[in-house]
Image 1 (cartoon, rainbow, N blue to C red):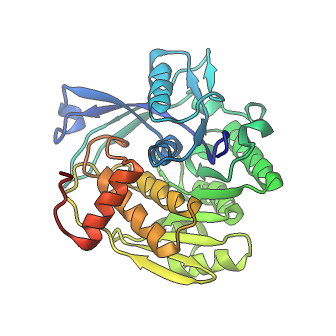
Image 2 (spheres, rainbow, N blue to C red):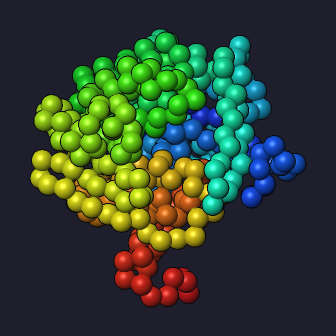
Image 3 (tube, rainbow, N blue to C red):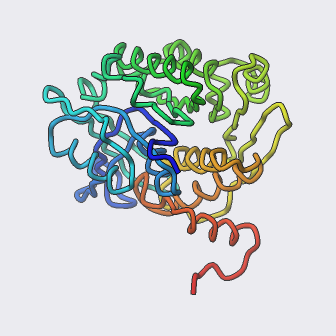
Length: 322
């Protein structure tokens, strides 16, 4: 077994202050501290599933930054290459949590340490031995230097034969649709593995999602596209065919983080050589477990918990481990 990471992620990790369940953000008096970030969520999810993961990024030299790094370490994520910026703060995210109504998310990230990520912070040895580099569209939208750092990672991954996984993770509070098309569209075309929402493919590439998936495959670089449908089902498409997976019916406590959980579940299956149908089922299972708890990462399972839950979803029976 190797000692380096199987998966390297790079992006923004923020301190999350989560309002008490069911209380609107402007009325909340009690908050729970956690962490959030698309790429760090995926790193934590994969680490809990038993994979060696490394997170690259920058936090401030402040209590929030230390909390972020401490939580990632506790999840088993390697943060030895994370940067600590003495001149910029760790980003902050405030949000509420409602299973059946819109969720209010407020970001305080302008001038953050994460936005000061730059190409000089990226080194070839950070990727040494990795099989997958996982990126999202959020990081290059933070700043010009962060975008340059992402493309430096893509260049290094290409030269090292490392597969690139990309989730657009479109957040319109970060930019206009045109800006997202300019930033994330080219990264979609560079990815070996694409995990994208139906609406994201339509926004970034134009046309229907299935048409966009086929177009990416025809370019010759992308080997698999996973489409996350509006009804929460998913479809995996490759040269070998297409496979569909329904969402598992669970009581939702907090839907935020479902996409990152899904990505971690699918990448775990891919890394272990599982077929597309099994990888999709595992992804749906990990997402279903994640949305049953508050915060982005509370419900992320270990491999044993995933397997027991998936068996219960597919086969039924007593869900209680006795």
